Length: 321
Image (cartoon, rainbow, N blue to C red):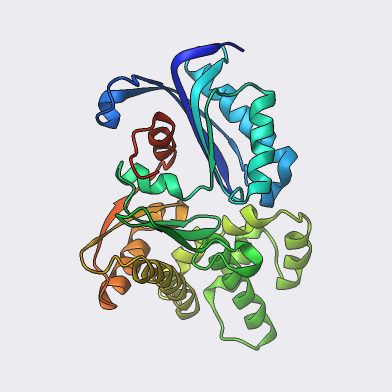
């Protein structure tokens, strides 16, 4: 592949999907995003979380997303001037080096930035990157950056140690409530009937082979979250408690970062993304309300496509990164 002037690539790879945007950028006119670049191609594939699906599958999905972005732009694949890859599970040097080796082998770009998937959420909300990014999709985490450029994160420990407030943990709590109700150890709940019907089974015991059939079943489990929200909306007390705890957990992450980064003196920009926050506005409002009750004022920005922030970083439009 030959280098192509003005092309930049942004990739957002999470626990459920990988999104790649190809843009043509005017590097001599760094004003705002709309005047500086034009998105010309978009590609999408499966999860590229290396911890969730492994490197082989993650790299395959990265390849697919990039190829589809170039196809969408009706261009042959070439080496782009700059690329930013924001990947869940790639926050450590060992993962980033493996990703860099892949990028070198496929001659992806002349200038590569590899980061985890939280930072672009901040830059999708504002090119200065100041505020708190809150992600609640398959997994969850929060990342904050203050005016001094100090950064800190909270959560993001994965499904075994954390992911509180995520689609996965909401669904897992619902499944645990179902088996406790089935045993008689917990209160009855509509979740029992609704989840069994959804999965096409007639007894809770059938959950065992379904949930253990695939060792990488986080995505499947997380996909049950909309049903839990639906049951909670009908007034089921067990489901309502699960959702309330999830919003409390997310608010706690944000509050922790606001305190740690000294961002309590004025309203804080809160950029939210992930399927749970984007598709459940009442839940998102609950998170903001709990923050307000604890004295944290926020200005909320919904970020349906955080890949936009990777283009800001790839183009060098951000000042704080």
